[in-house]
Amino acid sequence: MRALLARLRGLAPAAPSCGARAETLAAATLAARGWRVLARNWRNPADRREEIDLVCTDGEVLVFVEVKARAARALVPGYFAVDARKKRVLLRAVRAYLRGLRQPPRTVRFDVVEVVLGAEAAADGKTGARVMHFENVPLFPRHFRGA
Image 1: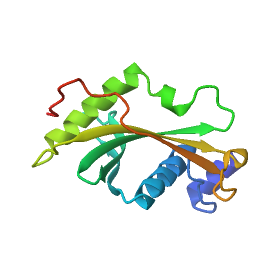
Image 2: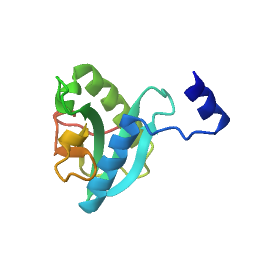
Image 3: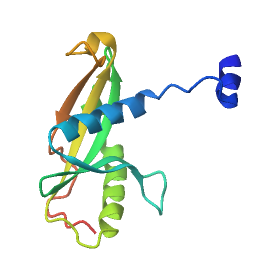
Image 4: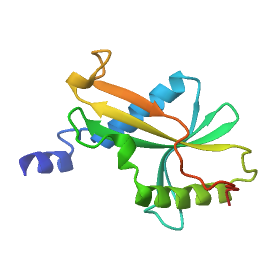
């Protein structure tokens, strides 16, 4: 309770959540590969529960990225945590995002970035995290047109 009160008073800075840290690491990893991050935590104005973690461009391709943070000893990997229900919500959010664009892209893709947090997960020994990128994860119907 004291820690909460101290944070509320501004005496102690709040630590970033695991999800926010994972999204920052994912965005930095993708940017280092030459991607451009267009939006972070984009929410559908019509339904604020629908969120896209990262919207990026990989060359001419518009990429929607779901970031999953995991502990080093998690039982379910982040890739498999994007289940059918989550994919339905993401598809609604993607359609809303695309409807808001003046000119829809020719190509869209869905990726999952899994960030394993913890000192023992670090491949480099510095960040305390391991980032795994899964490209072109099935999300869109066969002849997806966007809006």
